[in-house]
Amino acid sequence: MKTVAVQSLSADAFQPFGSFANMIDPKNFGFGEPPVQFVRDIIQANFGGPTAVSFSVCRVAARPMVIDAAEYHNRCCEAIMPLDIDVLIHVAPGTSPAAPPPVDLFQVFRVPQGTLVVLRPGVWHLAPYTVNDKPANVLVVLPERTYANDCVFVPFPEGQSLEIVGY
Image (cartoon, rainbow, N blue to C red; front, side):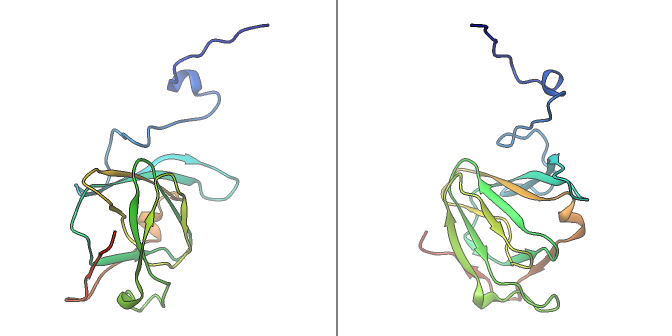
């Protein structure tokens, strides 16, 4: 029987076959400061469409369990998957683009580590919350540059923040 030796993964050695990226410990943070940091477009894949799919990481540290803002994307889904611990996500149904976030309709779900969640276009959401004092690394999959060309962020009206309980 012939043998084949295992080699270290390196950019030069793997280049003929594709690309790779460390999604749990990225070297460069793009947006934000702790407790919420977003490393955008770490690696892309073209699945035959006009826009590449982009893989990013959102690192969330412990922060107050208060929802006071949300965002949505008009033209695309967003996929998220906690890589190392469970997270909490807040979501509400899509509304008219001119309407404020439907504060009374938000729900919070615990997403187990390794579980992929896909949010439909228009669904209100924002960065997840870690369930304990450990930071969570969350894989985010969107079309490339969605954060710049299809992201509507809206703070909640004064006095309408939501406290997350029972997690």
